[in-house]
Amino acid sequence: MKDKLIVFNWKMNPAEAKEARWLGAKVKTISSRLKKVQTVMVPPAVFLPLLTSTKPSRRWSLSAQDISLEKETGAFTGEISATQVASVGAKYVIVGHSERRGRGDTDDVVRGKLMAGLMAGLSVILCVGEKARDAHGAYLDFLRAQLISATKACRRADFKNLIIAYEPVWAVGDQAAGADTPDNFFHNALFIRKVISGLAGQETALSIPILYGGSVNSANAVEFLAAGRADGLLIGRASLVPEEVKAILLLADQVKVKVKVKK
Image (cartoon, rainbow, N blue to C red; front, side, top):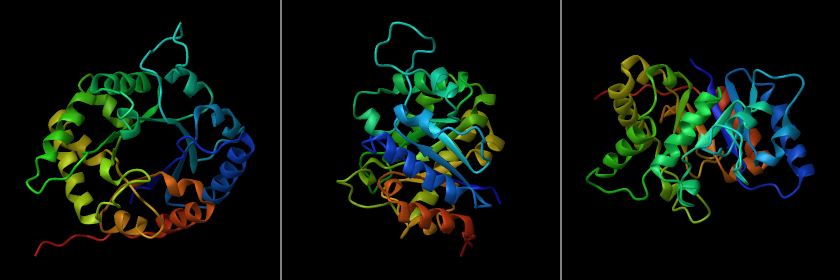
């Protein structure tokens, strides 16, 4: 069984560098002991250099929360390029998060950032997800459009460095109605693989990691990994609570996937 990929998105937290170092040390200590989990910390970009290590670990990595779609250095005040992110030790980047889309990242911008990340040698975590769920499944057309638009410029070989995070927007943030269900995630992940199969072939579709994100905590993590058969999790608020981080990682390291049997 593949290692589970557990991604902790700190968002615009914590407030100070000393807190970032402290939280990072906690995550490193826990994750380094695990055997079946790959842990990714996603701090604000300003803290990335504080968390790099002269002794790289096989069990934890760093990610940027966002990058510029500009591929080169230049007169882009406030922007951070994928190359700069990679140069301080990050291995991943998140693009298309609903909070970035909510601040103006269009499908074209998401595509540009995705390609910039891939060209810099980063593994890209592409977030997709609907704002509302309808009973007739029309939201699946929205998911399909997001996936096709974001990967329009990808060559087939690019998909090997792509990770999909399914994050329904209505399940993200302080005002979230709550998490999706593992069963819904399982079926939506199958749909995502079907779309990817049409874009890059069945082998790629079966191998690409699909994560669940949206109100994940230690109480529901196992069910998304086991019953939902998620390849990993993208976690927000719980990322800042060491007890939650430890519980989720230990549970993920021991999880056993539940095989669905057709009746």
